[in-house]
Length: 288
View (cartoon, rainbow, N blue to C red):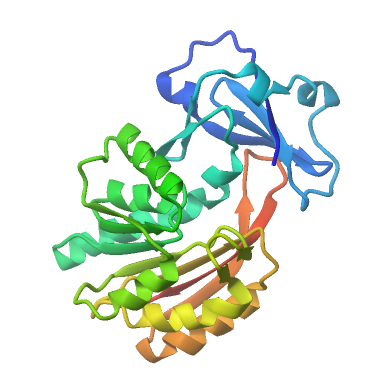
């Protein structure tokens, strides 16, 4: 996915946080317009069919990221900071998951207050680390699993710029499915499990949602602690229906009680900016 950037114009002084903050500015015509601190980027979005709100002059300010931006950018999405290299892209940072990161963080705080110990979180297909960092910020102990060593390195770099390098994060380069299967033979159990496959079908990881997700849910159900928070599934850029995810979750976790929620993953912006769908999600939450 290509991305282009341009500098914003503002006569106001900006704090360090302002200079890094992410925001969705506009969408439509098959693209989204995003603020990256003092920069503005555009990228493709096949779901954004509608007309744009902002005039074309705002969209034409873009310059080429790879050609004109030579240094790594720091981008803050909610409470989490990321590094965006000139050869990288916003897509991998998953800003559409900001609200889910906030939910995970809040759930970990509540768990620690009630149980008087840190929550144990398993993040399968950890990617850039949004869920991991949000949980670690809330004091959780996290196992972050990804098949890509490069992805693990980037996530560790993100942990460092969030001053989380010394937190209880276990970085695991492994096939997430095989890791989960082996983990069932160990004694470690998790209070919250996140499953976030990067694409519906990823040949490098060998995981296909339609073929493999049901079996993976069966595996992770055996990894839950005796006082679980829940399980979160995010299917980004995919064709999986929220109803499908809801049925799968109920099938696997209804025996534990609790409730299942499902819906779209939406990239949201300021008032008046059309939300952009980026996939589907489901949560099984074990209520008290």
